[in-house]
Length: 292
Image (cartoon, rainbow, N blue to C red; front, side):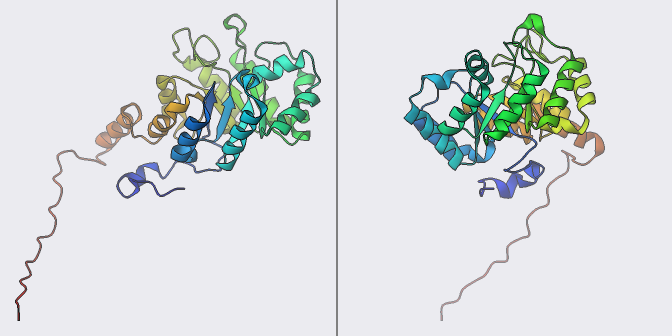
């Protein structure tokens, strides 16, 4: 953990935040076209706040091999897991065996892959095989559960059941589909609000394994809701690169949306009294120096 500028003043507020490398409470950033200069700046400033870096959908296809390898090497140097979006795998499977895809991803420098069936149908046996295929290639399998089409949304029980099966088969994390819009899919309604009934059912079925979930939550209100519900160390994904520190502040109760609840609890319990006057510092004793 780096020596943070305000640790002496607010350090106690962030002590419950898990530090890297962490398996719970990960932050997954979505990159849909960031340049090298911006990437260097962000990593220099906030690499301790970033765990996963996803090159969204098929955007990495349009980078030169040299550029992509440089980006991936830079992220690895800063301890960040990298993977292409699951849609790219789905496209590749239309023409290639998963072994071809995994071998190529590894050669480019990715450290993980996202395995999804958000667009194409994928039988259970093939999903299992692809998880194992990724692991055999030396890549960390991360699966995604859910459909991108608002008209084809699975039930909460189906979502949780698939997530548990993926973890059992060797997935390290499971991403909950929310898309980059955060609307009309998964736990979100068309306005981006969270359906608490669906969320509660998924959480109940997952049990302790819920720590291995990464909820795609691109909107601040969604992030705040999930932090209030599951705590500081909830896994959150599809975070825009320019919102990394804003999310970390939200996690650590350094923004109104999450500080407000803590303040109300402290007022009710008497743990903090706004009317209490701070003690005065001890009077300084005047020292007179006499020239001899």
